[in-house]
Image (cartoon, rainbow, N blue to C red):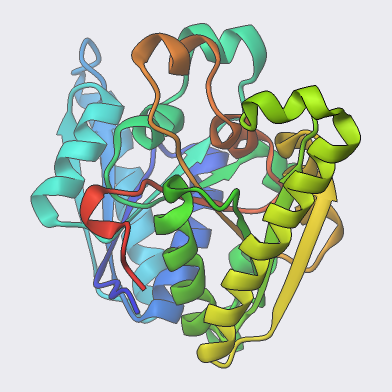
Length: 302
């Protein structure tokens, strides 16, 4: 099981950042981790008033974390927010980053991005995001649970395609479900329009779907086997449709409190214009999303 000693919560004082802080504190409480609050004053905004607001936002997170029984401290840095978050996380060897995302999509997201998506794209540490869609949906128990309610996460959903890139996400999902004593949902999306099977497409869409579904069964069964070894209850779900739509719809209609998925390694051009499934899911998910990148030394983690 992964150890979570320090959870880094980034805040700018916005409502979405406050929701992310609530989620991060609730998870830190469950994991018995310390909270490190960080706020960044952007370059060009060095006024004392702006820094005072950032300090107040970070101190508010510390206050709430301590009320939840966690050790906590606050830091304010100056620079590009995404860069400062990653650099500070590296300097303290944070085990988890928590950020809010305002839910930009489409061309605006592709051209401008967001702090959360920048962090996800380049971070080598797991990142948990809470978006505006979660606020509109009323938020899961992860955000609303009181200190005395016990485990706030009752359902963890792992969205997986069975690739090496999903290895870290699978390990994280299993570890978090075990720590929270939560039900684990292993979700696989069958998208017959996907081109990953190459020449299989020539055999017709029916055979292509069958191949995907068989791969999905093997993938979710492997996750269920590992979950069973940990004594976890598991739901295996194989659903048809574009992965982004399947994932968003699944977490909307099930008892999932936390979504876990991998992040793809793409070139700068690909990730700017095309993005990835995780980058499309994060701003629109109705529950917090934990993304994890598989590093070379993690591909064999069990």
